[in-house]
Structure formats: C-alpha cells, structure tokens
Length: 243
Image (cartoon, rainbow, N blue to C red; front, side):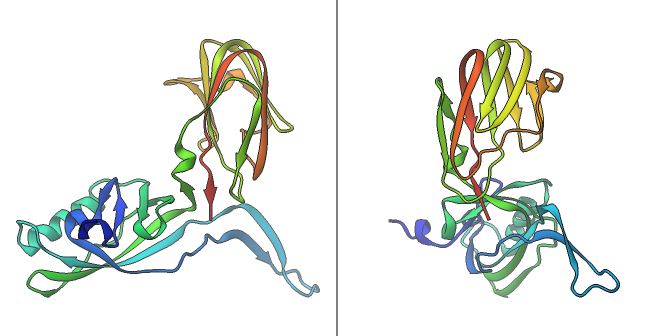
C-alpha cells in the first residue's frame, strides 16, 4: 500500500485533502447532533416543560490539518488553491474522512481559511464545517430495485427519508408498513423525494397527483413494501442514516 493511501485525509466536494498536501492531525470526537428542544419555565411549577420541536440541529465537525507542501507551487499559491476549494462554491457537499469510511455527512464551509506557515513548506490549518445532523451510509445510496412485494431492512436506529421512483401507469397505491400513499393518473413513472418533500417526474411537479399524510419513511428494522395498480417496479435509494 502506498503511503498516500494510509495518511489520514478528508474528502470534501469529492476532492481529497491530500491533493493539497493536507493531512488530518486532529479530529474532534464522534459527536452527535443536538435534539432541538425548548425548555419553558412555568410560574409556580417546579422544573421546566420540555417542548420537542421534532428535529435535530446542525452540528460542527472540526479538523486540525497539517500542510506539507510537495506541490510544484510556492506556499502562497497552494494556500490560495485551498481557499478556492473550500470557499468558491457554497452549499451542502459530501464530507467524509479515513476514520469513518462507511458514512458521509452533508456539510458546508464558510469560515475563513487561515493557514499558519510554520516552516518554508509546512503549516497548519483548522477547519470547522457546518454539517447537517445525520450522517449517511454509502451503502444506503445504492439503488434497490423491487419488482414484487417484499421487506426492506433498515439496520440503522433512525428512520430514513428515501427517494422512490415508481415505474407504472394509472392509479397506484404504495404501501409501506401501515402507511398508504395514493397516486392518480401516473404517466410512465413518478418520483418521490422524502428529503425535500416533493413529488415530480423529471423536472415536472407531480404533487397534485399524490395524496398522503406526509412522505414515505423507512423505519428501523423490516419495512414491508407492497402496492396495488399497474406497477412494473420500484427503485428506492433508502438513504440509511445515523447520528
């Protein structure tokens, strides 16, 4: 195995920190996201009321990186390339590292990127990413094709918000455990994305064809999936997730 492959690195925006000579020197512990709750004091009552807001807050993922410049640039030019990598495009991007290769987070970076030069070609860089609360398994990003009723197993402790593509026509009812999702007048296929709470067909909105109390979720353990109507198959990206 080459040395490059065993050096501790992170990947952000599909680009390895090793491409910039950055090696992880320190990472914060495997923190979990904070539950969003409100504590309310009531006069005359001991203790606060807890109001659960039904969500988790974003979390900070921190790294301290060592920079060893072996690139054909001077230190200043390499520093500018690192800042372009981190800051040129804003949004949530995949973030993962060598220490936890089965999972990635969706994270953004908008802080300063101050690189401290310690020697002519050596420096340090501290990064704090703002990440969505859940981390996602790479395994859960693989499409699962279902052409007959069956159970889909969620090995994680938390429910996931899947992407589902139903290939079929006409009026269709999708059953996931005890939840029912009705679709009227499906033309060839319809897509449902529980993460963004939207139904569509390519670029065409399809929310008017969907009737349900919420969007599909895949809970921990077995999820029994069946349907009625003219359905050829389902394509599900389960998006298994954990804290």
